Length: 272
Image (tube, rainbow, N blue to C red):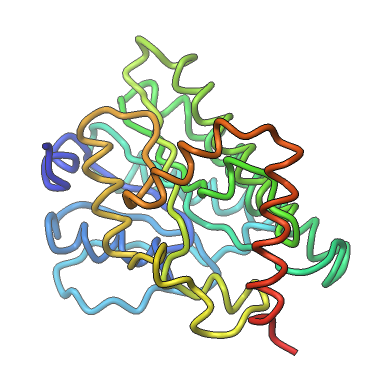
């Protein structure tokens, strides 16, 4: 099985979004341990707090839900890649995203649209703008989807739909890019111990223990899959089993069953 270190050997630079916490921060920390010489450019509102002295990290403060800020962030990345990073393959990691839990449209239409802007529009626009550079230099696009992408998710309906979009888009893009020197990987973690659930409006500790994983484990699974050239990876064997079984259930009864599970468990965990 190829290792995360094997996956990093071919890249001369990394661009990622949402590196200030959770899975994104774990990506940076792992890269800093394996290849502290690797230039990394992070786009997020907050700068990552990472204590690795040799780390070559460039932070671009950016609210990815704002079209103007996103455009300025993309321009900064292009300068970073063409003038600061050495020649060679580029790894783009679309990691930023958030969820909202509750009865649609709670907590309000503006929040729902902002989630679509971050989870979908920013991913597509950033990838589209950087794709010419990736094609010229080689590389990969790693996009963080979710196990929620595999079925309807009542009370997380818009979030699940955004992740279904990026999952199918990533797989389709991988086929379009055959022979170009660029590949894609859709990473589908299940519940992960990050700030995601608190931002979604749930209490701390609401991650189910039987499916929960650490962000460090998810990142290692992703890098092993990238090294192996896989277009899709589900993190964790229980999550793999769940997503496999979901494929045999029609969408309507799946939505009903998911609604029962999310309503009975999540509503008890929702913050007042």
